[in-house]
Image (cartoon, rainbow over all chains, first blue to last red; front, side, top):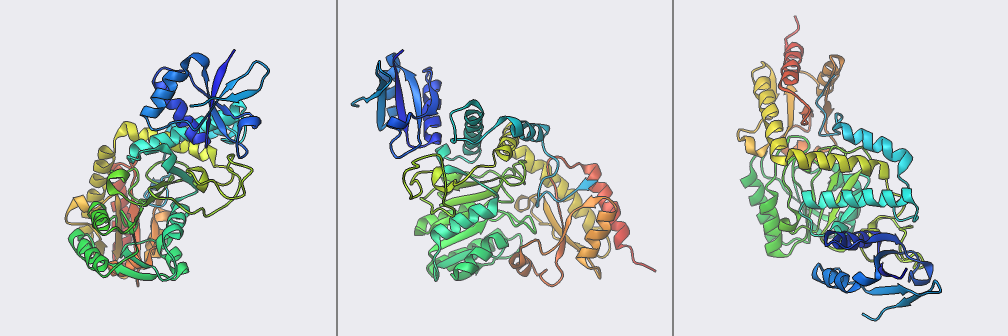
Length: 84
Length: 375
């Protein structure tokens, strides 16, 4: 299944992001970022389904939590950055 | 036992506090340090606690709520962020050593806006005078830990905002008892313990951050691990090392308890008990109670002395009768100096929502007995 990962600067930021999405009815799960996309080492991401990205971006912009980096899973298990 | 030392630590807590902390020992791991269930459960608890605190203290963003080990820890972060050797720092005359010792260590130019006990106008006037002389920082307690005197923190904050002077609030005695609107105050920081009016376990505290802080400790944060500099974002910037997640689990229940009960009800109940206590003490020959004429300027903390008796002896005698309170200088010599009790110290009684009128009556009977002249 394809899904998006919103990479966040901190665990708490990821939790805020997930909470904002959940409040808007979008299922969001906080998880540790895969090492290949974690940036400066460890970080946390918010996982959402492929079809909810446009809604998610709109909601996050509205609440001032605009993501800096978003990745999509590729079929081979790697991740590709999405241009925002 | 009748416990009247809640200004130091609330001993009786809502049942959920101990239950949650005990449950956390076997179920919560380290937030941000793993993707497994116990780590993520710990992360959820920590976040819920930040959110509960942000709601209670009107903080915009839960990221501004930082976990500390106690109020002293938070005050050290705040003071060491904003004060430098030679900084002109204005404090009230009612500060605890948790404020004065870090300032002393920094060798600041310290100025005291003393005012008078239970006289908010006089305190405000002295703050205005000191701020008009020029200041780089104000550090002020919301409530005196010795006398329960409520300082006019909203007005002091307004003076600071008008002059662009950063304000650090020591909310050790007010958090969980009085409303504290961090956003409206516009304070740089507010520090508070978890184990007093918030009914959490010892080893917990909160620092509310309104400006960029400097870390007091450096270390692992579970974020940006490749970088050797501490993260530049909150709360990670100030939270190096493993949290006291068991304590935080308990603190969360304390915050939920307060949210359900409402601070107005907490304050009203404590005020009623302290009036009962103060009026009862005043009627005892040889007793001197520091009771405000205006109940609106005193919380559930009251100091008293018995003529001709050492305060520690009085505390000891009450302890022998199963009444737990604290005598001496309460780590606040400046407050005693301002209140005129530095030479004698005082006996301090302080209540929580779990005290009753009946306990206060028993306490008064015990004091009456101790105060009776020996023949």
